[in-house]
Length: 408
Ligand SMILES: Cc1cc2nc3c(=O)[nH]c(=O)nc-3n(C[C@H](O)[C@H](O)[C@H](O)COP(=O)(O)O)c2cc1C
Image (cartoon, rainbow, N blue to C red; front, side, top):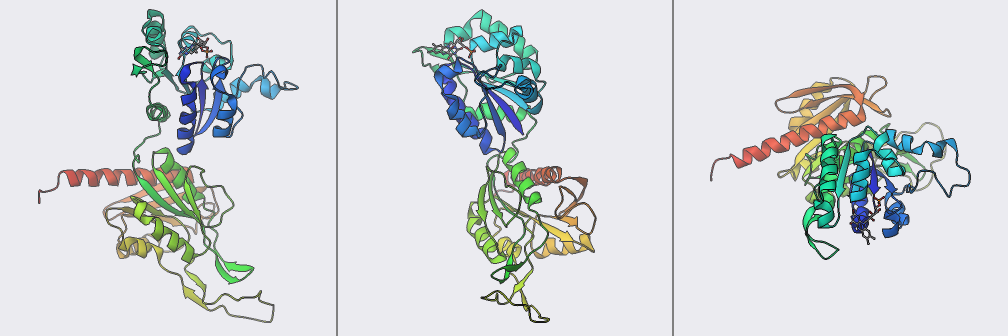
């Protein structure tokens, strides 16, 4: 998900830095666009550092040695690439320009060029806010579908009191996420997710592993972040980048993964075990690189069962496991569900070509005590959403049960 954050020239411009941080924390990338006046209040460098993106400061790219076609149509590229345009703080001036359809700088041009939802958070002196011209402009924008995050009442920087103070950054971010259709159903949850393969050492240069790419676990982590959860991600070695907003613990072996999961468990309210943990490891890893000398056998022993260890300390947590099967998928998954006391198990039949391991696509069945939910072949991102939607539903159901439970 990506948004453009328009920063216009008011005292509250510095508060936009916190808004950038909060979006990034939820895995939403931010392209900051500043008006000329905004740059009088805050330096673009602040936003460049926070968003790790070049800040757009003007329409004609002045300062660029050779304007090229790419920079010439940047307002269209940005307009088409964003999921929402958020303007915070929005000055009286920018509201007027938006209402009139003026397009004399990058932000106003972007406003006209984008079809993504627009969220504005005005901030100004109380008389400027109450002025009939500003109120009429706000009304026009509202009627055209622009979402308004109302300014708050209070003491203003100009020394006056009344409505005009920029709304809290949490409220602005929540309004933007809602406008983008991202539910915040997992707000307040801390989800511990394991992802990727493990490596079990044979000698200093060789190991046993599997084809897990980590993509399914990372998609779950990213989807959970966007639904407002805090994510603790324990990952084996992968070639893809985990979502930056997750709190990441990197591990190699099944032993290390178990240790990390057990250590983090007390902080978690939900657990998803999507890692492909090796079932076996060499009983003893050779201290030196093994030389070729005819046929050899590896003496393997089972690795610790992480899911059972977690199930033992389950308490009120919702725990979901993943099972990769190549035969009797549903039957085996049901056994695992009851043996390990899970709330749900997500089964993927990895014998099917083009899905599952090392692929962007997956098709799964979510099995619970009383439900079987088929998720047909789709992207791992969509599968992640379905799994998290189910977990949010389960949480709601339990909350209802608790509140209507018998009095002891
Ligand atoms: C010190 C100072 C503070 C200002 N604060 C605000 C403000 O909070 N809200 C506002 O609407 N305008 C404020 N203005 C006026 C705007 O900066 C001015 O209208 C400017 O043209 C806005 O340009 P922009 O909408 O392109 O960013 C302030 C001006 C100054 C000099």
